Structures are given as C-alpha cells and as structure tokens.
Length: 377
Ligand SMILES: [Zn+2]
Image (cartoon, rainbow, N blue to C red; front, side):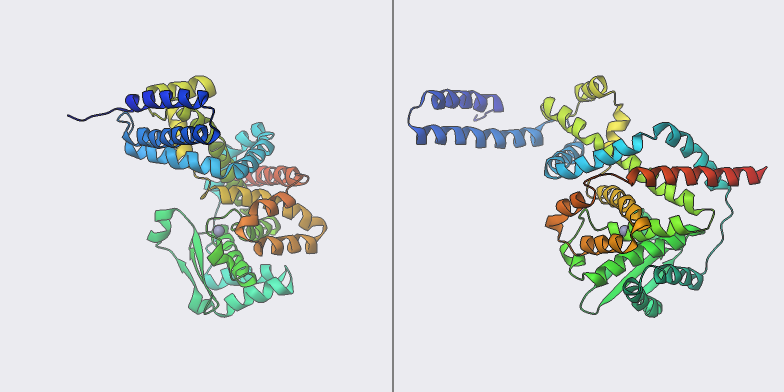
C-alpha cells in the first residue's frame, strides 16, 4: 500500500533546507529554497483543506476572511480609525441605543405616497445645485418607467437591503427599486438610491468598473445624510443615529478580524476548542462574538463604514464651503477603483470635523428621543 502523510514530506523538506544552508552554489541554493517554500505553501493549503477537525464551511469562511484581511489591510486601518473616533463617545452612545430604540418604537409614522416621496426628493435635490438637480430631474421625468416602490419585497428581504439602483449605460437609464416603508425611511431610501443614479450619470463607467469598491456608497450616503440632517422631521435624527449605529457595529466586528485571523494561524489553521479558548484568553472574545464577526465582510459592510466616515468629513466641509464639498464628491465619483485608497486618504487625511458631526448626530438623537418619550406621558 502506498501512503504518505504530511509529516513525511516535512521531514524531506527539513533535509532539503539543511542542504540549502550548506550549499555554496548560489543558483542551487536558491532552487532548493524556492522548492521548499512552494511545497510548504501547497502543504499548508492542503492541510487546511484536509483537516478533519474543521467543518468545510468554517474553513472556507476563515480562508476568505484571512485573504480579505491581507488584501484589504489598508481599508481595515481606516475602519479602525473610525471605530476609535466613535468609541470616545462610548458611554453616551450605549445609553442612547436603548433610548433611541424605545423612542423609535413609539413614533407615529406618516405614510408618504409615491408622488409625495418623489416631490420631497425633488425639492431636496433642487436645493443642492443645478448640475446635481439636472441629473435628478432626468430620473424624475422618467419616474413612471424607471422607479418603483415595492411593499412586498422578497428580493429585498432576502438580501436585507432597502433598495437598489441598476444603471444601463447603453440606454442611459437608472432603474431604481425602493422598499415602501412607513415614515422617513421611504424618503431617505429614495434619496439614497437616486444618489447612486446621479453618480452613474456623472461617471457612467463607474457602475461597470467599480463593483464592491470602497467609494461606491459615498455619493448615496452623502445625500442621504445631508437630507436627514436638514430635515425638520422628528424621525430624521433617529434614522441618522441608526445608520451610524450600523456602521459602528460593523466596525467593531471588522476590527476583530485581525485577531481571529491571527489566532487561526497560530492554531495551525484549525477551528477547534483550542482556537476559541485562545481567542477568549487573549482577546476576551466569546465564541458567539467570533461567529458574529465572521459574518461581517469588508466588501459588503466596509463600503458603508468608509462611506459614512468620508461623508461625515464632507458634510463638515459642506457647512463652511458647499462648492468645495461638492467638488470633492465629484472627484470621488470620477475616480477609478484602483485609486480608491489614495482618494479616501486625501480626503480624510486629517479627521478634523468628523468628531463634530458624530457628536452632533448623538446630540440630535438624544434631543429627539426626549421629545418623543416625554410627549408620551
Ligand atoms: Zn447604496
């Protein structure tokens, strides 16, 4: 019977490594070392795949998280910065979560008709500037053909999203679907999706070239956040807080990826009791926290966190210099995916103002919850 185990091969590799060490012919030496390295790599991969201790599912998740982590390390750093800035407000923030939740459940929500919703969106985009408005107007004029609101939203629910925008550049049309929710959510959702539509008109290539990149949510979140901040509606601060809460939560999960990847590597790429024990001992993370963190991905959630982070900066600029902030937004829209990091970096190279916006959102959410909760009694 022919059989071999990884142990046997490692033994040969050790011998080969020793040979390489004493070899004086440089080309031979390099050849030996290269062989050793490539075989070690293959074995490692093989070992990960063949390990019986782990379910295939968990292994593939960890493999993709670890390659995502090394590939997107620069973006993980930005997310860590966002997390650090928000955590300054941790105490205030934790108190608010409960309060906002209670206030949100007590609020009376108006149901906006489709026509009302689009009229509000039109007034909002008209207030930005004539160029942005011209793009919105195109979508508005075609609204009966290209925009729809959907109450039953199987396809939305499945992906737990509140809308989407698909751009078809050969016919120059944005197709938009928005969840028909009560209250301000319907308004902010249409403004968000039209933000994607506007970006598609400004730079039609973007929708083809940039899939899942870290710039794609910036225009939509910019207009959404601006709308919520300017809205006189009582619900707006709650919706703004909820968005920030989602970003902060996901940032916490993503900041754990590095720890989990390290622990996994140190545990010889095995997911077993020892792996969870090590994480708990070293980082004080419970198994359910590890699992939660693994279901958050840099591609899906990262774009929203980075988007919101950049948007806080842009909104702060907008308050003092509207034209400059819109110029920066256009620069972001027109940049290529490969420049994403540089563009984000040049805009948030200093975090001045981000703080102000975050504390403002917390303060408004607090005030608004008080009003709603006091009104009750
Ligand atoms: Zn979006």
